Length: 161
Ligand SMILES: Cc1cc2nc3c(=O)[nH]c(=O)nc-3n(C[C@H](O)[C@H](O)[C@H](O)COP(=O)(O)O)c2cc1C
Image (cartoon, rainbow, N blue to C red):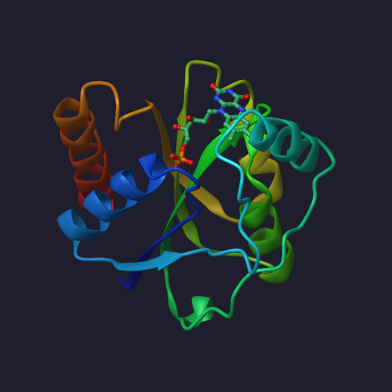
């Protein structure tokens, strides 16, 4: 089965998990990159980012060099922003009407993941959800443990296919 890990990451946590999942299961990797990334590293990033997430903003993405239609299994990862997925993932969902895919969901947060997985499932309702997992700021907290957790989770999902 052709498998790809698709993710957005602002500060590297989701990227760390995505790269480890892709490496472990031998999947392709696709990073969603906004044309214009948020510049602020201070408090303003929350003001802008929270507003963008709540308003379901769609940030324009750089062109994607992979044809998603050719993949059977998708792992999709995002940071939690205001209890939901980040705007670049929203753009991705709206630009690719995904259906009949097998999907694993993962997210990174700082302790409040809210109903992000319900929201992702709602956006992916014509697909089969294989599993979901979340990580709490893995760059700062228990990095190696979180990497092993991600690897084990992805391997188990692949084994069931
Ligand atoms: C705009 C913005 C909104 C956020 N909202 C939440 C939130 O609702 N709940 C939470 O637990 N963490 C929230 N965070 C923290 C990130 O989800 C968390 O640090 C995550 O690990 C970052 O992933 P990344 O490094 O891949 O960007 C927010 C961060 C930003 C920048």
